[in-house]
Length: 222
Image (tube, rainbow, N blue to C red; front, side, top):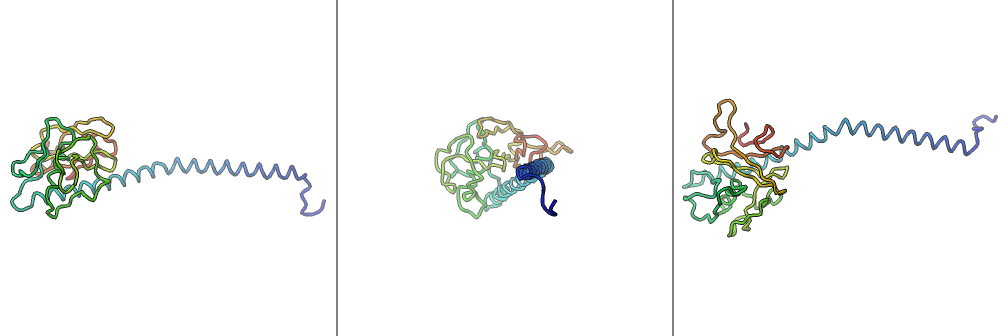
């Protein structure tokens, strides 16, 4: 036998090399599968955390606009959650009893009547939708449309807006799927009084897309 020379036939050497490559491939596939099982919960959790951060940012933007509206000269009231405010006759919107998405639609209509330095949503197109397909009848000035739009959370569910005057009522939210959900204002579990009893609440359904469950996001936070 000549040193360094493999005595096996070429075909046998080729088969051995091919078999070793297949084994390596199977090992790599197995390792990737194990890594996917280990890392998938972390990736999913990171994505959900990102959605939570994004939804809170949208709620904060809305809250700052609502607070700014209330502080304007000769105001002192928050945008109503039912389209009804005698102190703002320039608003033409009318809401029917039992209308879906009424709170957030009403807030946006009032916030977009006049340019007054408020944080508005005309440049937040990806935040807005008209999940129930309704119309204001006349153009909403700063939004440049007649559709009664809503602000969505990061999961695509309309946010809910309650003023303290509307805390005792149930709002109905319509999703793009056509499903409707009932929503009530949040109470403080320790005192059984409403959260933010004299101001307003903004509610996101959270990751489960169901309202009045423990993963809801609220402004102010519970």
